[in-house]
Each structure stands twice: as structure tokens, then as C-alpha cells.
Image (cartoon, rainbow, N blue to C red):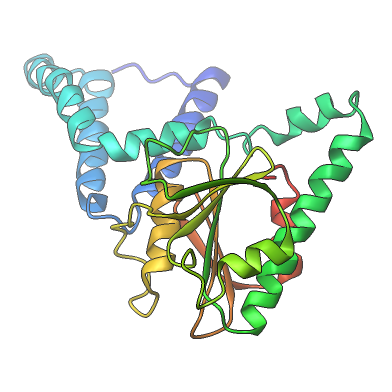
Length: 258
């Protein structure tokens, strides 16, 4: 058994550890969390048998198991794999590149973005104050049409008063989610997939589960205004940030979501 570790090995192990940690965070709180831990243990055993102790017979058996297991993993974790690649390709993960590129652009677009963010945040502030429930999805690069049941198309400019009127309790369009895409309000009264994440607190309602659900499957951000508590929450990558301030919301949305 020849164990020689160099700088490349340290870098390799570190990168693998980071990858598994990110995958663990992705699966944490879901129904497949224990399955993932079991697979992780199997991978460690396979590595020790094949590469460290070099046990040929047991190594050959484990190699067969691993080769067949890859197909099984794709089937079992198809939702989580899609979510992982959505997170990996999210424009929020590469926002530093966008900032470098936009330095050579015009300030007009930045001003337009800031105005749109301010309109959304102001609407959420007013809705929270009046205890009016709302669910607003801000699309990223992933198209949402295949992930949601789209509601009424409106194709309107983002406007505080319009957002408030749509979610007014007596409005026929207040149920469901508002979709914002390409700096436009594109759909209202849309139906979103519900998250099956068991880590979401029981006291949170359907709006919060819908916000988590759409952000699990896409790179969108989802804003929830609670009718009962008059609070604002934000979902990104399937994780909920509960009871955030309007200033915090504006800071996050200003990072490239609108």
C-alpha cells in the first residue's frame, strides 16, 4: 500500500469535499437525505477498498455496483440533480462576471433595474403593512412556463400601485403567483409547484411552500407576504428566509434578479 500525497491530491480531496458538502446542503431536509448519506458512505468504502487497500476481488464487486448505481442515482435524484444544475447555472452564482461586463455598458439600464426593484419592494412594504397576502416570482434565466401553470397574461410594466391592486383581497386575480420576467409583469394568478421539503416549518402556509417549490426547480427568487403575520419572506434555491426587512429584500433583488 503506497500512500503518497502531494499538492494535487490535497486540492483534489478539497474539491471533492466541497462538492459533497454542497450536495448535502441540497438534499438536507428532503425525503432522500438518508439515502444520500448512505450513498456517501458507500463511495467512501469503495474508495478505500479500490484505491487505498487495493482489494481486488471486493474492489471488482464494488466497481460493478458503482457502475450500475450511477443509472439508479439519476432516476432517484432526478429532481435534485435538475435543481443542482439550475443552482450551478444560476446567474446569481456568476454575478461578478455580470458586474465586470456591465461596467462597459450604459447607466440607463442600471437606473431602470433600480427603479423596478424599488417598485417591487415598495409594494411588498405596503402589502405587509396592510396584512395583504402576496406571492411574487422573479424569474432568472430558467423559463418558468414548463414549471408552473401560468395564469392570466398581462405584460405590464412593474408598478407599485398595480402590484397592490392585483393582490387586493377583493381582486379576482389575487390568488396565485405574480410572475416577473425581463422587467415585466408577465402573468398573474399562476399556480406553482409545492415543495416537499420536510424542513419547512409546519406553521407556514401554501404560499411559502409554493415559493420554496418553484425555487427548488429553477433559479428564480420568490417573495412571500404573509397575510397572517404581515411579514416578508424570500425563497432562493429552495431555502426560505423568513421575516426579512424591505431593505434586505431590496439589497438581494438589486444583485441582478430584476
